[in-house]
Image (cartoon, rainbow, N blue to C red; front, side):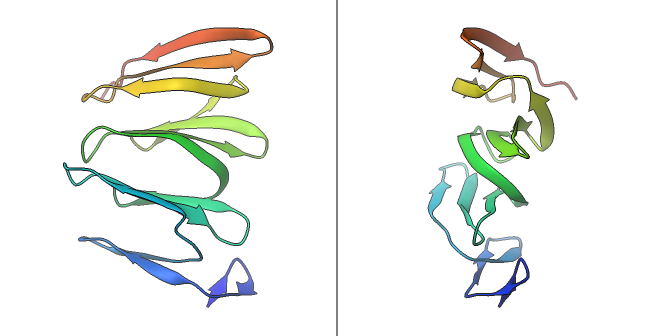
Length: 129
């Protein structure tokens, strides 16, 4: 298979609704009782995450993954040395170097602690729309 301009082994991720790929690995995965899920791995360098039928790739360090039902999710990632969060499909650049203890309720409202320099800040956001 041809992944990121290189010939390498790969496979496809099959869900009830779609087929995604090719991807090279599946290092981490989760399936919730409410049918929410994610798969996470790398494609010979860049990482990917497939979360509730949405594929995000070509970034790094996908972490802080939270699922709250089939349509509500939260995760953080890095892209070009910047930290981002993604809440329910909306990506937002953060002015923090690290994120700690994220939490999300069933409505998609989230909170976390972010580190900037030597200080820790509390971030709380209500999902609108």
